[in-house]
Amino acid sequence: KVSITRDMHIRYNGKEYTIAAGSVFFAMPNAIHSYKNQLNQCKSLLLIINPKILTGPASKLTSTISSMPIWSDPEKKSPVWNMIKYAYEHGQSLSKECFTLLLSSIVSIILEDLPLSVTNHSNRTEQRILEYCQNHYLEPITSESVAEALELSRSHVSHTFSNIFNT
Image (cartoon, rainbow, N blue to C red; front, side):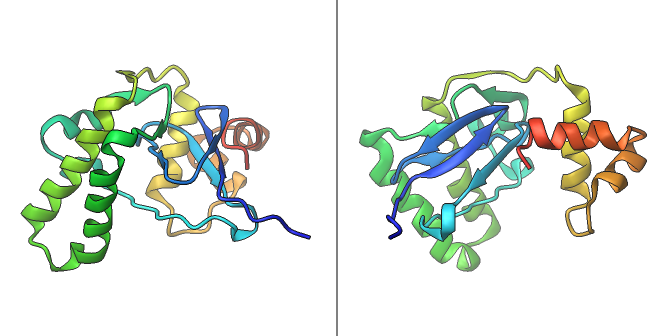
């Protein structure tokens, strides 16, 4: 018998979290993260936003990091979820300026409630691996290809993926 759960397990900057239904996992672009949806039991909406297009308070997204990536403010949740749903359903029909403003508003509201600090690129190797994967996501990526491109040992790349990226 399989019990249906709505929780999703995430890993964010080396820490494990469980996110409950109705919450937002907000992964900053400079944070190492992954998520696991056990047996596809959780319905989720994945919104990937290019941080370069954001304006206003949301533009600080690339220079900050959050120590707690889960957002679930019950007072703001309904309007934000409505905005997210609207962006998802009508984004293609909106002008670029309107869509950018909508996404910037969503991100700004969420960032208000997250504990933020200035980005610390303390582990440059992890960041380099993450940047390589982001830049080459359309290509087959192996530990060998990453190691060769970044001039690292394959075992170091493999260790980083296992311990930091949990994959």
